[in-house]
Image (cartoon, rainbow, N blue to C red; front, top):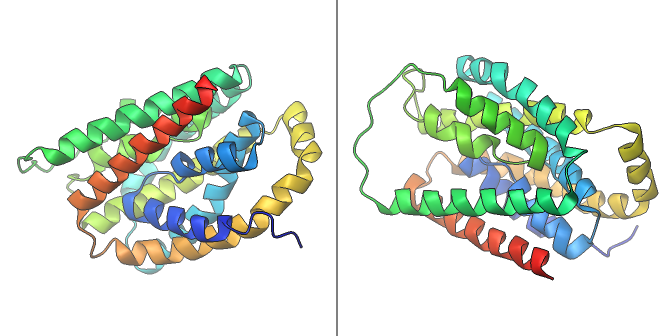
Length: 258
């Protein structure tokens, strides 16, 4: 057993906890980790981020179902648009230049982080409950998940907060975790064309050395996160996530410039 990437174990627990408490994909953090520390091909990095999230969010799904923080009506409604859109995005990813994919990822993370930081700093009025399912947002979110392995949770969660069927904030995150988990499966499988599978086989040694530490760490974090969200200060969490995402985007841009 190789211990080259042992440090991914504690990092994985932290990333998984952040993902489970915010409802955004851990791919936002795993992609830069894999790019900077492991040095894999960017296409493999995006797929590996999806695979990692399957285990982390799969663990989170079990915990959220157990504690009753999943609204299955919301889950079913958003899957109608996010799943087919993710398939389209995943198929397109094979034809887009790797640097362009990284640039799109960095820009999206930066814009979202900045938007969240500004909105969290402003005094917000009480929002009115609604019955709307934001289909168009689901299409964009699913497409981005397939293309750059992220964007789903960030885009659909805001529209879920004040839905009249949501009884507690933890249901928003719990439902988002289930949606992200299912769409991740679709996106990861859609990318598995013969050429890409050969790339995975060629890099199997490095992948196994990474996953042996990453997978158990995200499973552990997936159990801890849903318990923390029950008592977390949502606004402070948003500010922390926003600053972290902006920092991640700066790292991505620095990679493109080297």
